[in-house]
Image: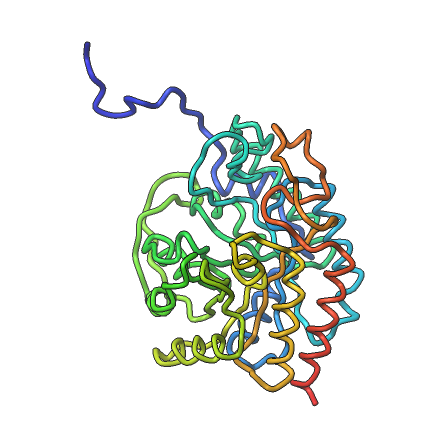
Length: 362
């Protein structure tokens, strides 16, 4: 039996549209472009301390429903102007990193598997993700999200004002290279065990440098990118398997670690994940109220290095107890992945943070 040199275990290939074609299929409006460009500049100023507002990235752990997502964006739009001391971005995670891909429980996100049944129609997923993002922008709400795979994110990047590298990829040089060329501010989370603070420091130093790397071009072909480097960066504390790291001790030490290398020293606290978990490791969305109150106290006391926060929130509190077999069977208002705060607690927490950030203008 003859063996193949390549694709020996590939059973199917399928072409999808190029990033340029996706932008034509689902274009961003002039008003949407203005929102993206203005809020990228706002986030840059917040990172470097010239805008005193607190950036808050709030929204679902993952997006699986257009209905639920737009309703949450409308909720934010209705309160945005009532919180002048915050710059609000909506979490828009269209991809989800899974350590193990086994069955529907390890769903990889709307952009990759829009039906949530393992069929992985990426072309449909990216188009649907763009449609949702464009509608959010039409409400005047900017987007922030994790970039997981550069080829997928390149098809969506024109719609985002801020991005981050997640815990699983914070030490990955390929992500550093892409981040050095992104047209928006970028954050880096430490790893799940919390031992990667030096890795975050190294990542941000590298992202600041000019780099060259091979990747997909806008026309879909493979090519080389040369970057200028990205100095609009921040570090993210997301809690660890050993416990939370949102306290003043942690945020100040992290700020000092980042500042040592000539970085902005900007700290973002992810109020969820390890910062909203019980000692046994079980995540509890309500604990975001606890971590949020502590960070608000630090901000009110004058800790200017805390410049951003992340909140996981949706139109219903909690998450699906059992992962549905497909998106069609899922509650459109309830998180598919990590547990999220409901609307009432979300607005309550945002008001607490807005009052705390007001002290920066007194």
